[in-house]
Length: 264
Image (cartoon, rainbow, N blue to C red; front, side):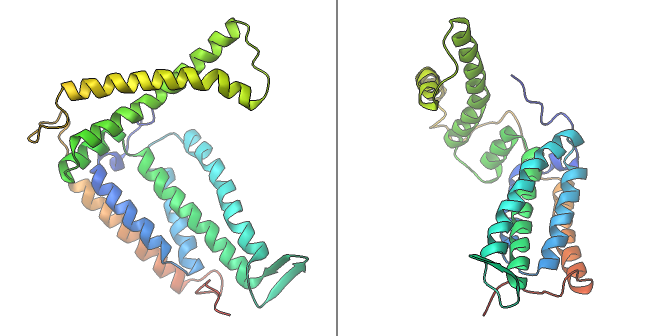
């Protein structure tokens, strides 16, 4: 089973993976300190444009991936909108109390969730896990035994899914009833999959020990990763996103609210 997520590439695929991870983590932390809903709206919109235009994947795939995040925005915002605190009440019905403060705070919370989601999607769609761990070993000096263990674990996921599909077909051929309770399905599938995974993990661990993955310090790498001009472009892109969001949020506000935190 082959997943060709990285068939269509853009310049963001050539950024050093560990450097890109650092940039995304810093942007992630920065989003936590944005309390101006206008700035958050601008930043979320810009991240959406970067996701749609610079990740290199097909628009069909990118639009499909956006569907669950619409649900994420709704679930993140609705509880704060309906039950949050506020002085200017718009609607009150039983426990539901929609106020101006809770509405803007809920929308802000939903936008923050979307911003986190777009950061993760941009990183995931433009970074191959193998290159990320090679970069962590070379630039961040991550011990190879941990890096190769993670890489082996990631590569096992498609194999487990393929085994699940094979096992399902085998049970159908043998006439095993597929309908029934969830506990019955777990009984049929969990033990074979778990035993196969333990056996394969043991074989991989023995092979890694035999190849001296744990003791050799001066190691050569199949993929040599370094820094390039694309990393500088990535820094400039993040700074431009933040500066543009702040400028438009302050100079051209959409709503007359500069801080969604409730202090009443």
